[in-house]
Image (cartoon, rainbow, N blue to C red; front, side, top):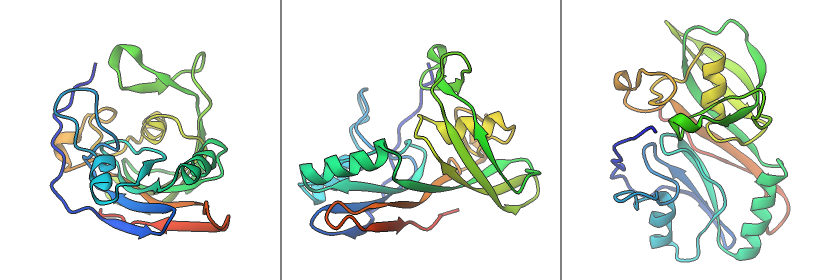
Length: 215
């Protein structure tokens, strides 16, 4: 079992966009998306947003250590519509990450099934026998000294998918307390949800929301 010391950041709520049906926020790294089950883990983006917008409803989640775009609904109908965007894989997500080592390929695809590592929860692992299908496309943005900046395009939405897939390639995401073992050398997990695109629940038109990468 992996334990972590929860210290949510004391930063202002950042709303990127809002209308009568949706609210889009930029979640800071280190803040839970929803309340944790254990004591002392009540503070979360869902709670902070609801304190400012009483009608906000959860649609999806980001890992605690990941920052970036999260969309919330403001009606039950909008929540159901947006939930289907994710469930049917119509929503398009783009992440930015800094990973260990210099990646050789300019772009590629990771197609490896992922399952829970029950002995070391909440850790996930590549599981060819019992895992669920998981696909991630990647594209190198910049190569540096001992590291690479990449954009990641998850085609599925498995727990810790990007973190597990990058580790499987031999290029774990920098600052990852679970998968890279170098978290003390970095101020945070170097993973950010930069863009979220989906159909608007009111108009049905394609919309994209962006949160600038902080690293």
